[in-house]
Image (cartoon, rainbow, N blue to C red; front, side, top):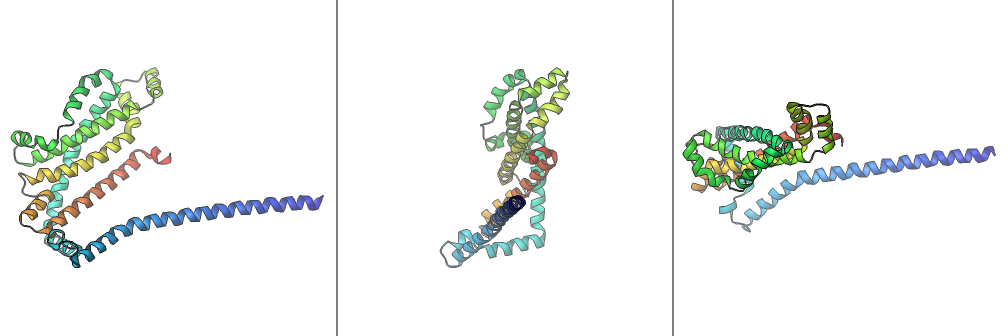
Amino acid sequence: MNNLFADMGQDKGGSKEVIIRKKEQKKGRILSGNLMVKACSILSPFLFLVLWEVLSKSDVIDKRLFSTPSLILKTMIQLLATGELFYHVWISVFRIILGFLLGAVPGVILGLSMGLFPLVRSFLKPIVSAAFPIPKLALMPLILIIFGLGEASKVVTIALGVFFLVLINTMAGVMNIEQIYVDVARNFGAGKKEFYLTVALPGALPVIFAGFKIAMGTALLLIVAAELSAARAGIGWMIWRAYDMFDIEKMFSGLIIMSFLGFIFSYCLDLIEKWVIPWKNRE
């Protein structure tokens, strides 16, 4: 009998060791898979650049139109050394951030109001639905007439594009909040301020940040278009001037900087989202 219990104890101990070993093997496979994914995401741009360089130098693609990564990098280094690139980037970033804030803040406030109050939503939704599909670049002549050729016209163009996207996402986020939270707040006698700050805003934050990210991409598109006309500086202006002079390397340098700015802004929004919505990362 004692031997039987001893064998059972050994079986249990052995089975535990097998389970632990399997868990460790599974964890190792997951880690190796994650490393492989990260390695592929890092290597793929470099492989693309190498392929581009080889095809350009072997005349498979026309160097007059696409140049080569090595020449583009050389041009970017020259632009950095002279300070010209920093100047244009600073001008564009200032316009983007200012236009984004001017569009996002009223978009959030009005979106919360439309999501919370059916009367406000029924009054403003037809106007938003009619104005949103209008291409913001089609409004550029009107914006230039009203705000002139200075900084205001570029900032307003970005703000208009950001405003509607943030407003619509904010309204959708509020309307998707479970009704029980609204009922609880109402039963506890919450005022309008409490509804905004403790119910609508926290509940809609994930969707609001999704709207921020989409709006930031739109802001980058609009800044280039806004700087193509009536501008004397900025990345969009630099790209357009390079096109006029058929300076392909400089034009591609501007395009690469715009893609880099898009990555930086998206990364910053992700960091802010993790800080503002810590509970989302625990789900």
